[in-house]
Amino acid sequence: MPESSQEDTGTRPIWRSTGRGTLCRCPNCGTGRLFNGYLEQVSACPECGEPLAEFNAGLLLPLAVGLLVVLLFAVIFLVIELNGGVSPGTYLAILLPTSAIASLLALRPSKGALIGLMWALRTSDELQR
Image (cartoon, rainbow, N blue to C red; front, side):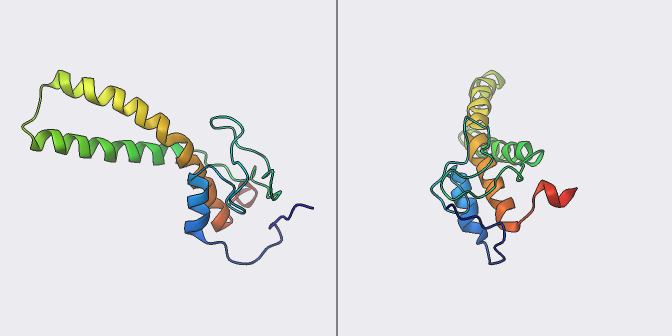
């Protein structure tokens, strides 16, 4: 019988559950998968049965991914400028593909981390209604 920590009133370590979410694993057990496809979230963990459908990253996900990409751009700009700078065309040639690739690579782990964080803090859509 799968265990569900829905009745669990114990502590949920934030760093552990966020790390498990970043690895796209269940924040409760760490072994079940968090996604069916690229971003389609499972309704419950296939390993431990923890209900995960109630945790929705929503509009916080684009904010988190945007912040990560902007921080990456800041580092790239700083390195280029400290090495003498380049033409605006070179900036575009470097930063446009980098932004697209970085956004796609950061999207899934960021969503998993946000789901893990919401699970640890017990914030769900049901509490907001």
